[in-house]
Image (cartoon, rainbow, N blue to C red; front, side, top):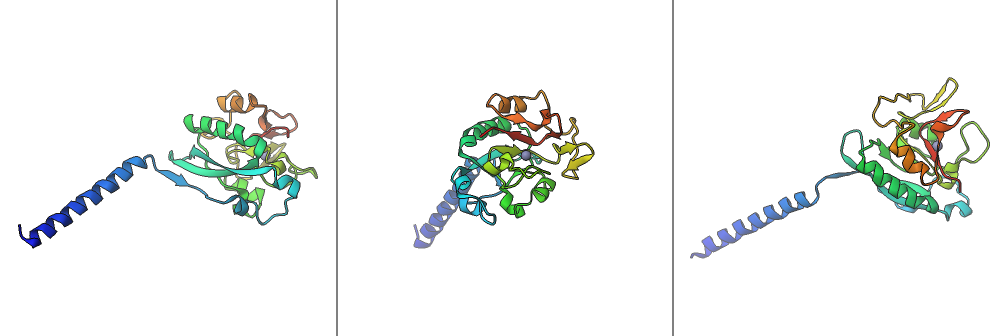
Length: 210
Ligand SMILES: [Zn+2]
């Protein structure tokens, strides 16, 4: 065999193995996961004054979910360490039941504005803020609460709806229903659902007493 032919065969063999490698990679990576965010803990808690006593109770967890595009996404929650395990388990239920969640991004992305985060239909836990309309720290301030799909599950108080672009319509995907397995998954772990409150209906909100 000529040297030229040998080199030619070598090149072809290399190309074939490269092709196989990338094909194997594709199969291995299926299904494709869309990364909605990838913060470090430090990045996720900057830009706001958080008391040290609270900061040390917090952690960041990765969660996976189907979004409204029917693809698997990876997001993150800043939560209380005591709530982390419950939320990991609940999110594995959310993923397996394909309950769609638009996105789960720490509210640092929205410069700590709950109004903007809700309007963007973002699911979040920790935010150092008061209860809407009161001078009392919210359970979100301890990472012991979560708001899910605020647009499908707004906070309704008399004629005020937050976010303003929200609408509670039980026929829409991503809406939290009273007798759903999702509510049961929270309740059986000791969480309360804001959709069961009397004074107002906070359909997006679940919290657990610290
Ligand atoms: Zn809430």
